[in-house]
Amino acid sequence: MIIATNLKTNFTRKHTKEYVLSIQKFLQSNPTTNEIIVFPTPTALDNFNTDIIIGAQNAYPTVNGAFTGETGTQQLDEFNIKTILIGHSERRHILHESQELIAQKFQYFKNLGYKIVFCIGEPKEIREKGKANMMKYIHTQLQGVDLQYENLILAYEPVWAIGSGHLPSNEEIADLHLELRVTCKAPLLYGGSVKVNNIKEVISLPNVDGVLVGSGALNVNDFCSMTRYSTQN
Ligand code: PGA
Image (cartoon, rainbow, N blue to C red; front, top):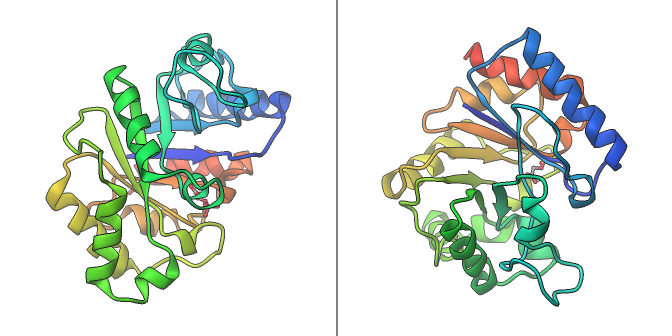
């Protein structure tokens, strides 16, 4: 199982360090075979001296250069970051990142061998148009993505489930993950309103290889518990 958290624009540098160290300490007394990934806010990236995988929430496909406000691999290399989140719905919908740029990022970081957690997921109005439309939309979000890439992890995160407290039904999650599994052998994460009290059910579903958690992981004790629940699955 892969248990990942996207901390988004939360926590200071100091708080993030405490957060990562708390998880590290917890895992020392509660070892797990799960892969644990934390995506801190960019200013909080650091060398944490931990077994937890630390990833970037975003980066620009460049080493360095004139890209105001962006982060390149020169900055990521300083902290040995080799994991990146690409295509998150907030970058697609709030920051209007195009599929073209998302695909360009995928290609760039793939060429560098990064572990890529690639996010896809439909808005409510697309889901309401029926399954065929939903699958078409999701396949559009995968354009330019090499589904055979060995360091790919796919995260299915319905936009309407993110931060809303509303998850698709178990059958809907299982059905979508089965559709993805047919074309992609990569681990499949579910994300969107996963919490400490529903994670066990989510990860027990077929073809769910882990979770990507946002708000439900902001409490470090909850996130620590989540790393344990999965192994009891
Ligand atoms: P959420 O966010 O857990 O707060 O719904 C998930 C995500 O955006 O990755």
